[in-house]
Length: 142
Image 1 (cartoon, rainbow, N blue to C red):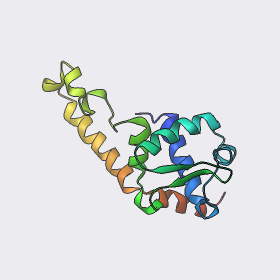
Image 2: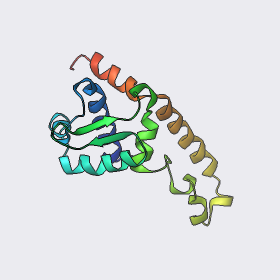
Image 3: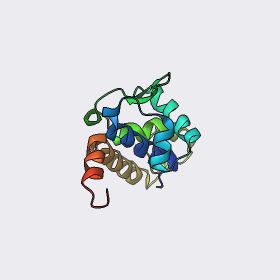
Image 4: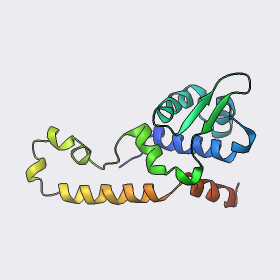
């Protein structure tokens, strides 16, 4: 399983917002500059994150983005699902995927992929945005 840039960039961008939350709403251009992500790509990601209630866009001269909940209440799993969709190693174990795979009911490996997908989802659901920020601020190169 490869996580796309959508998922990786969304976690980085939200961590940036969390780390700078005391400054008020964080402008997209600042997130883009610090994280090396295109401002337009950030806008795409944040539209998805807004739809699920993780961030709020604030308009105006002092505008930008802010988290809708404390970082300790936002999991990496939520962020990934918001921008990537379900966490699944293979299509047939994603919700509804079994309907599209003619082998799903008799597949000898489907249970394995379900267990592996659930384990990955469990890890991502146990790590909060606060955990990511804490690691970032305690890393030797930060």
